[in-house]
Amino acid sequence: QKPTYILSIESSCDDTAAAVLENAKVLSNVVARQAIHEEYGGVVPELASRAHQQNIVPVIDVALKKANISRDQLSAVAFTQGPGLMGSLLVGTSFAKSMALALDIPLIAVNHMQAHILAHFIDEEGFDKPDFPFLAMTISGGHTQIVKVNSFFDMEVIGETTDDAVGEAYDKSAKILGLPYPGGPLVDKYAQQGNPKAYAFTKPKVPGLDFSFSGLKTQILYFVQKNVAENPDFIKDNMNDICASIQYTIINILMDKLKLAVKETGIKQVAIGGGVSANSGIRGTLKEAEKKYGWKTFIPKFEYTTDNAAMIGIVGYHKYLEHQFNDASVTSKARIEL
Ligand code: KG4
Ligand code: ZN
Image (cartoon, rainbow, N blue to C red):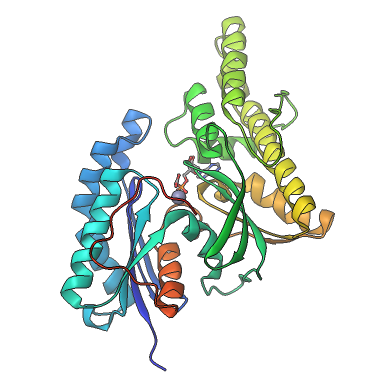
């Protein structure tokens, strides 16, 4: 049987990404990060869409070259339909449509949140794939969800944030500490040198499997302001301990809900995805949970945690197998259900 070659495009936020997959195997996975947003302390939507416009052709060219695949070998073009920033999504959607039309191959719209979860089905040496049903916790800059995954395209959100996403909690805490955007990876880096029990933050009381992170952010702000008033060098002197304590609190919040989700569903296969699953603390804690609670856990390869096109490609491949195609009337969607 002839292999399937999918070109996939991701442009939902501030990264322009393209990948080529041969069946479930990644041949190339290219990301152009947009440094421009750093000086603004967050993603500026207008600048993001302009940068996508500039990056998309070269990024796709590099992805095809690295994969050593020519355009006429492609079986289909997959793209992120949403959720995300409208101006950013439009660039990828329009480009994918034109390319599918020009090459006369199927067009496949992909849900970005489904892709973070199905990234676990990429063929990758040393990485097992979960069996259905499994639980997936998607933790990123825009989302915090616990999802019951019954099959490739049957997913149920059983818990989600009622306010900020966990990535936002990281980035906003980092901002309070004077760290550049996106601060999540830096908080993680300092946390690894610090004492997680140096300072105590209270966990929010949210019923069921839902999350809340806005109270924690306010708590950290007041805590830092109070201490800086007494000692102007408080942050500098205690960066590692502050970050370790914040990270400890966030991981506890996530783990409490995961444990409850396992208890309520009886499902002991637990996968994580999204940018925050790059976090060393959450990775370590989840690995420990295998021995501690008898879970089987799935942690994605680092390059498939933050936004990437390979995860869009794997969804594209499974939709291709099921002939789930879209016509040229398909539109970008800023909000879209799982
Ligand atoms: O999935 P992603 O790349 O984009 C969204 O769809 O949001 O996630 C980006 C988020 C940012 O908030 C970033 O600070 C966070 O993931 N992040 C981390 C780490 N690496 C990325 N947060 C904590 N620890 C990390 N190591
Ligand atoms: Zn994402």
